[in-house]
Image (spheres, rainbow, N blue to C red):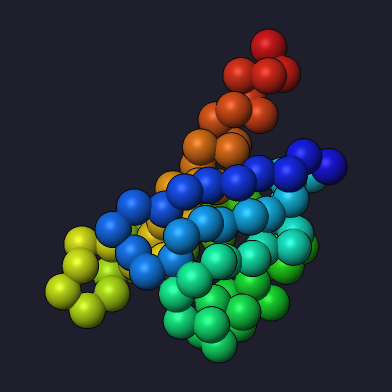
Length: 89
């Protein structure tokens, strides 16, 4: 299992942590942001396919912003998936 830390941009959350193994994500934790909603996202995505989550959350916005914490999670997951893919070659 690989642990990832991601610094989101243009959102209230300051950091996203998660573990990645065999294409799935675990232990998603947001630091900062809307505590209850972000805990709920972590519970909902626990053990799910990382690419499926990234595809569903990509482009989600918050208020007047062009992004959201969920969208930033999708960016973190896409980065993780790309790194894992390049590590396999």
